[in-house]
Length: 154
Figure 1: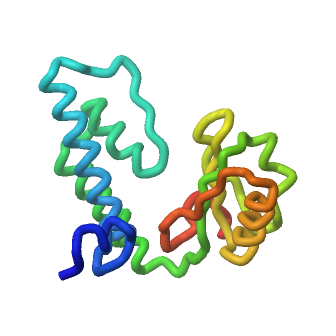
Figure 2: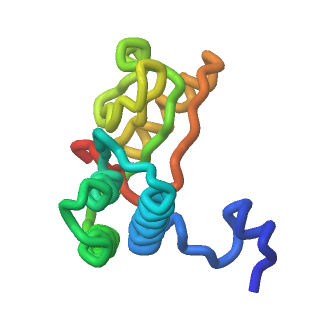
């Protein structure tokens, strides 16, 4: 069994970054957080979610049970095993307007996280070129540890 520090550095046998494990683990953590906050009397007035966060948002709103949320997250993860979709994703410290000059065909804005942070998704080779250009301009960019290009045309 690998040492804990090896797992934290992304080495070893951990599969937490694989969709079939990562989606249910993330959902379980979000459900647990909702439950802890509820036990403290903290309840939301408004709930939003994006991508797999929509599962937790539905749970937090009371629209689905924890069991249903876990079923959805598990199915979402398993569906990634059978999908032929490929590609990569990256987090970038630029907003929608600022990232536009860097985009290449095959790379999309997958999510606008804030006015100064987007997630890119698409063809791995094209995304690698975008990452290199961003790094050359000393823009924060981090390739995400995903197996597929979520939220893109890829």
